[in-house]
Length: 154
Length: 154
DNA sequence: GTCATACTACTCGGATAAGAACTGTCCGAGTGGGGTAGG
DNA sequence: CCTACCCCACTCGGACAGTTCTTATCCGAGTAGTATGAC
Image (cartoon, rainbow over all chains, first blue to last red; front, side):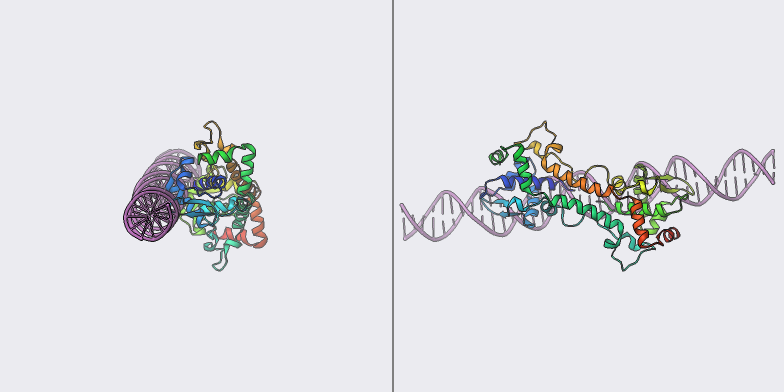
């Protein structure tokens, strides 16, 4: 799994803690975590394409969350960065086997594929059940100063 | 996730269906699925290093399962090929943040990391709960001729 | 006929390239604000 | 003083290299069986 997922998740949290009306530039987000700004910008573009954040060009521009943190799941962010395809994708190896058939879709028929798919669904479910708001609440419960400190250092 | 995982899983099934005393060479397994033999051999080596299969050199050599299919989980095979490290590994991005500390292990403290870890644990649990024997039983239930047909075509 | 020996064919095992994906960088298109000149 | 226009700095967006990981290939070490020749 790519490193950009971690960047995107933390950036989304910072965007959620930022001033509501204010857009945050990729440069400021990158400076916060000491990351390469241009590459972080690339990840944020992926979030924008997925409709998780909105982008504004020009002065006073930047990124902001497209909707409430309660409406953004961790799965949304991961999918936006990593892409929608499964980690395990069945190449239908059985199709070329002597016991196989050319007309069967082994992505659904193959029991190995089914088992791997079931595991990935469990993974997706866990990620889909947690929203950015959940993480924010947990962080603020542990460190109540986080929102203001984040705003101050952005 | 690498393609070798699929190869390894299906190869293990074929090894399980093969004649008990007989070793199967990488070449024969590769021919069965029409795969590059040398590269499949590499994956089988990984399985051997993980103790899932045993290898024998020379004529009449090859690979065979190191233990009963009931004692081999899908997670064992996946871990042998992909390695033991998690797909999402926390780079401790918070350490360099203004609000962060150098002395904290954010791989455990960061709530984002925890959430991702929880999801991966769910994924691992699903894979650990299914053994090769389970898959074999399900396949044989659907196509009872599979064991003999596999032996005949190996 | 039997045994020891050398040979050959076969298989794994690791070292070695080719390709793809991820990571990182750069410059251009568009935008909004501020300065400036005219009314 | 107010307004309209122009210029400029700023930001995103996509196109362009560097690096790491996956995929693929090749050749050597070791082994078991076999043929051969001596006893």
